[in-house]
Image (cartoon, rainbow, N blue to C red; front, side, top):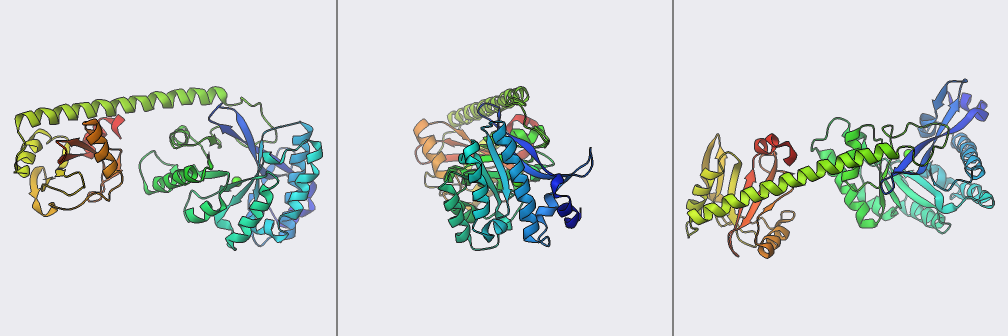
Amino acid sequence: MDPLDIMTNINKVIPYYQAIFSADRQTIIGYEVLGRIQVDKDIVHSLGSFFQDETVPDEYRLEVEMVIINKVLASYTKGKKDFLLFINQNAHLLLLDQGEALLELFLSYVPNGLKLDNIVLELEEHVYKGDIEHMQNLINYYRTYGIQFAVSNIGESGTNLDRIGRLSPNIIKVDLQILRLSYEIGPQQDVLFSLAVLSRKIGATLLYENIEASFQLQYAWRHGGRYYQGFYLHAPGPEFLPMDYAKVKLMEKFRHFIRYEKRKLEAIQLLTEMLQGKVQHLLGKFEIREDLDLWLHHIGKAFSDISFRIYICDENGFQLSSNLVKIEGNWKMQPEYKMNNWSWRPYFLEYVMKMRLERKGLLSDVYSDIESGETVRTFSYPINHEQYVYIDLAYDFLYEKEDLL
Ligand code: CA
């Protein structure tokens, strides 16, 4: 729609609301406010592109925004509501007057019952190109009134964890659109994962948005998502909904996710026990002596259909044996790997400590192998205090038992 058409029809501009659900009680904890224009009785257009179009004069966008927020706050206070209102803000526009006009608007509704700590301003981190310190100052100023902040639109790319960390938002909104196709491990998952880690570190609540299918909700649930938003749960509309609008659906989904997760954990437990029993049996049969490669050779035979690589390290991660590697179906010794150090690998020392203390084998999480690029898991077992055997499990084997991936 032409910006001038919007300005001449500014009285037809209305807010739409998309509900945000909380995992704790499966109820609505708030709404994101979205701009719409009522073109005809049954026709409503989004104002999304109008707000994002930088060729539209700032005054136009600010004026339309004020109309929308006014309407939101009027119906919110009139209905004596007490949930969160997520209001999108363009950081550049907000900074034009240091946020004064917007703050005044909020303050004018306080006598009508508006609690400022129910306001969450949503900023798109990558849209703002200016000095991060200005942004920080404004955020701190607003915070003195109790107003909260969310950073959004960081799922896709250009993820700038350092900047997000410095803004220290109350809520991080992660876009799950990049998980459109499947539930497989991909590089996007690493981006998503680092956002989850960051939010935990800075104490921000994780909100997953654009949830459009069950597997995305499952991803959100598995990865620390406390708040959920998306068409799968609610399509934006002109009204506020009952708090328990999606409670039945969410509870049913959670039950399903929990069941699935437990089955997976059980499969992991069973496999760990099976592998442990097997290694223990082999240790009884073939005593480990100086020639570690000879011992690996015996072990390799027993793990031929499961593993593609086996080796022994000491407790500091120095490889004591050769690599026993499956190449075109046959085991081959690679002595050049002796004395390589693996202590730098994630969780390596943590796992060694655990094995020492518990004197039990451990199954790693699923990860991408550096050399083959395949999705693998590693079973490790403490032979004694100085020697630990690592058995890398082949993708094909894990794939056959789907609960293990
Ligand atoms: Ca938004």
